[in-house]
Amino acid sequence: MRLSLCLLLVILAVHCYEADAAMVCPAVIKESGIFVTGSEETLRKELEKYDAPPEAVEAKLEVKRCVDSKLSTLEKAEIAKVLVCAFCFTHSERHK
Image (cartoon, rainbow, N blue to C red; front, side):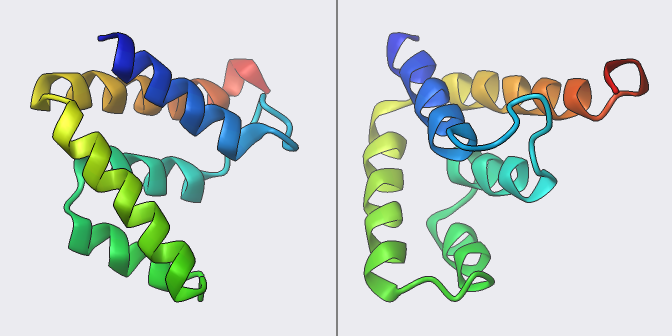
């Protein structure tokens, strides 16, 4: 569980370091969810939408392979739940 918490903190830090942390872009949540629970091919297709340099895509896929080898399906599901909760919270009417 320690690794999954670290992964979640890294995801949030990478995607929110210059942004208003109160509002997370839906595309960031989607990509993060694919990173954690999707296949390598699904992530590759998602990253192709951004015209990222091939070496940047490969670097992200390398990290994904490492994460996939370290986390169980249950740990990935727990991270996905946190991402969904973060999305719902930041887009709820009472939070605005």
